[in-house]
Image (cartoon, rainbow, N blue to C red; front, side, top):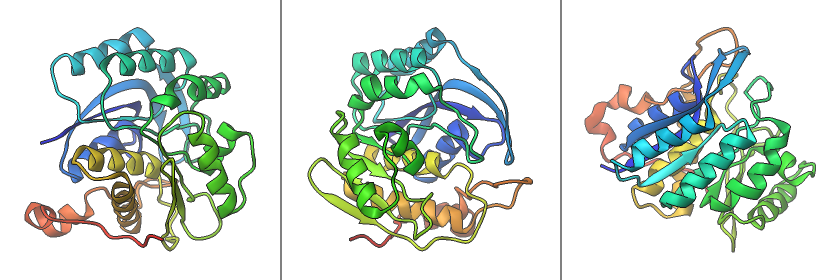
Length: 277
C-alpha cells in the first residue's frame, strides 16, 4: 500500500483539512499520515479561532514520519504563517519526497482568512517552487498573481503565470466561477480543461482539500498527472453530488459514498470518469 502524508490544519467539524485528507486517502486506497500545522475551531458556519502549532513541532512531526516510513506523496494544505512555511519548505528540501501537491489554503468556505497576508509572498517565494502541482481556486490565484480572474482565458493565463513562479504544474479550480465547474490544468507545456456541471448544493465544505489530497493519492499510486487530475475531479464531483446536509451552514462532502453503497469489493476496481478536453 502506498503512503501519503498531509501537512495541513485540523478541522474539528471533520469536513476539511487533515480530516478531509485522511478520509480521501482511505477512500482512494492509500495509507494516510498527518502533520498538524494549525488547530482550527470551526464548524459549517464559521471559524471561531485558530491556533498555530509551533514551527519546531511541525518540523518534529515531519521528522517522525520520514525517519520511519516511506512517503510516496505529500499534500500540503493550510500553513497560515511565514515561519511555518519556511520550516515545511526546509524539511521538504531535506527529505525530497516525490509527488508534492500544494493547496494554498487562504480562506475558509465562509470567507474567513486562514493565511496571514505576509505569508502569500513567502508561499510564492519558498514553498511554491517545490510543488509538482499547485491547486489554487480562483480567489487564491488572484492573490498569487495580483490579477482579477473573470474568464476561462484569465484562468489559463493565471495558471501559466503561477507555473512560471517555479512549480511544475498548476490547476486553477473554477468552483468559484458562476459558470460550470471548469478546472484548468497547465502542466508546464500544455493546457487541459476538466469540466463538470455545477451541482446545486451549499454543502461543499472541504472540496479543495479533498481535490488536492485525491490528486496526491492518485499520483502516489503511479497515475500520470493529467489522469490523476481527471479522476480527482470526478471523485470530488461524486462526493459533492452525495454531500451531507450536516450543520447549519455549508455541510461536508461524502468521501465514502461509493464504499457505503457498494462496499469494499465494489470499490476495489473503481475508477472515476470525467469529461476532459
